[in-house]
Image (cartoon, rainbow, N blue to C red; front, side):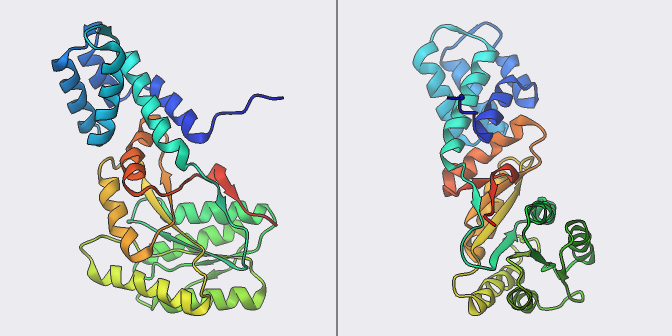
Length: 290
């Protein structure tokens, strides 16, 4: 029997244990064969919080180290390994595939602030689905920005998929309704709907997102089947506030973390995971039965 490969977030944690980044530099500055006393633990906890890992994560790392290493010499490598273990323990139980099986068409809505990689995530999923034999339709639901509409159009061309779009300022809910109607009429099995970037201080945008979800449900009572919250892995502690701003109006069902070029970025997802307990997706976890 072949050995089971580690999951995506286990590999991410392994990369974090080896990474040399701002966090690693801070840890190294604190621990160079230093005794792990109360003062060192306090400094380490402050450094972890400053690195946007959240207070709960920081306390878990220091507690783990203190349990076995208190009043003993500890190295920066041991600290990073402890952090990697905590990250893996937090994220791996929530690592689940994005299952696009079931009712057709499957309706997937993408939410998140501007610049989080929301539209790019939608486009990459569309390309992947098309390659696997599916027939998606895209909806350029961010009708506030011409650039967003153009970006969805480009991804539609790459995927060989039609794109539903309207003029700037058009009703996004009506566009979503029309996209589902076209999917039902033309036998598209997937509807991928982009939305405008949301900020919690923009009440009109939050209301519009609620309207989009309501209108989708009028057309298909069980839809949207997935609402994917896309978060930028580089934003640190702001990821929690970004999640809060989108969860209430959209009832997000999963999180996708983008911009994971640096392994340490994945650690910023821990506070989100522990706060909201949402399934965590990655492109490698996409599952769409024919």
